[in-house]
Image 1 (cartoon, rainbow, N blue to C red):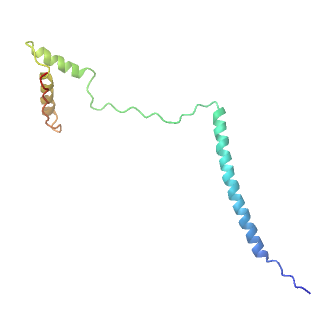
Image 2: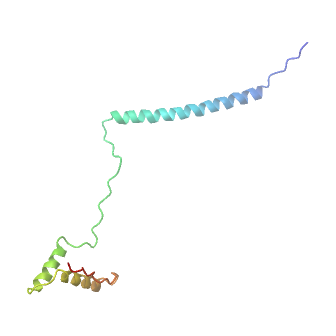
Image 3: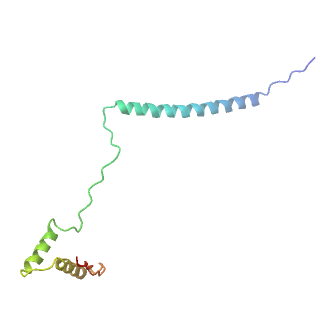
Length: 116
């Protein structure tokens, strides 16, 4: 008589458990992909407007000059010299004024333009 080996129940159950866990992971991945696709379709048909970005709050003005302040300075310099000035004079005066007001500003001399 041939002796039949009893099946190893523990090994069979472990193999089945491993197979089912692997299948469960595959189904969870597939489910997440389906949910992503369904979400895109739902957003396409929804009435809500989506905002893909947020508007940044406006930056504070800080130490900015008032509107037209530079133009007023130029007019003042021009009116102080009724005899006339060259086009480089207001620029040179502004550079000297800025360097005396703001010591952090590097002392740059205005570049001379070649005669044309």
